[in-house]
Image (cartoon, rainbow, N blue to C red; front, side, top):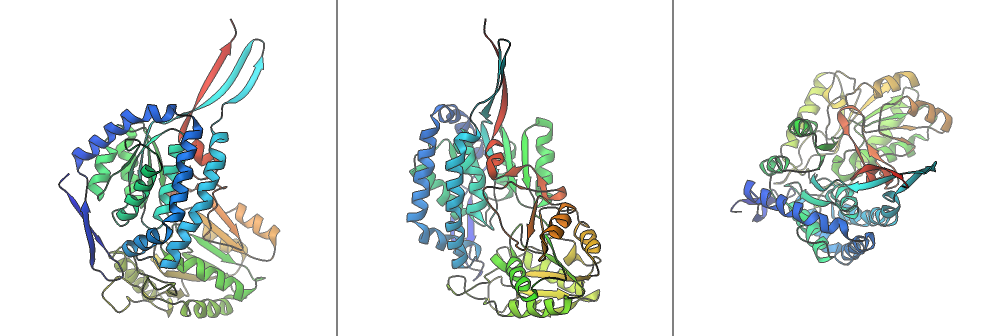
Length: 458
């Protein structure tokens, strides 16, 4: 392990530190160690695994401020939002702790004629997790914690843009009692991810881009390894004519700009009924203009840095494309002044589906708004995408919202809310948003395989 990884601060653009990284040999060694350690971990009573995660939760609470600071410095996420993520992690951990045992309890489904039938839930074995940088605690623990609780060993590769946070997650789990062989952290970029995919693994759980997810699926298909892919979206919202326009605008502006727009379920395109379109745009732009951008370590900052410098060029290209095709740049549209990787909160109105901003994932503080004449047109536009992660409707009419959302192709739908995830509900996608799911009791069971038992008394 002579390789290294340099960590940068997106706000300043400067190097923070350099840490040891993995190579193909160390990845193989860690995979072998995980394979050797997993059976003993699976053989432990569930109560002992639950106790480890309970101690892990306590450590997160005790070290929350230091953990938040680390995340802010390496991702550019505002410190208040980093604290929010860590505090928001706690009820997710509570859900896993409360539900894991019941989710994988043997199911006794038939007893009669001398025959007993039951379903067991067996750990997959060695689970690989290639995780994301935008919500490193949420996304990582959605996989790591239920995988460990159900008796799997985990080979965890955090994003190279959140490697310090990934190391902290691993350290706290080890200190909580999870054996080093059972929970392994792999540090590095794409070459380390490729080395991980090449190992003997029993499941691969990936969060990231569609292109990378597709390559992973193709690499693992000949080996018939279980693959789950969360691949982002182009999340649409529809504002009907009967809304409280100001309230809807404020809610959707937060959904579009929270975490500097770097969320899988961030609002990326908005369709507004023509009857309220102009008023909505005015309130939306006013809300966005009032958002404070600046130093992520300042507790009053709402908009921080874009974590990946190359994404700035994507945002600039989407703005230029939209304006060239007739959109109005209502605010923003440029990089911010300074040495780091900031981008102004950007609103484009007068958009249509010839524009990239309405079709391709932005993953930044930018949103396109399009006027529509009817509910049917809104649904048609919302479904005109290769993605299907989340979608929502703002209206005072619950029946109308339910009817519209039933017609939308998305794994998660919202009525009068957006950019929301619950541990009690499955997180899944349609189309290029991916395959498989996390969260909910289904997201606990996904780290196991069902085993059918046919038992006849002799």
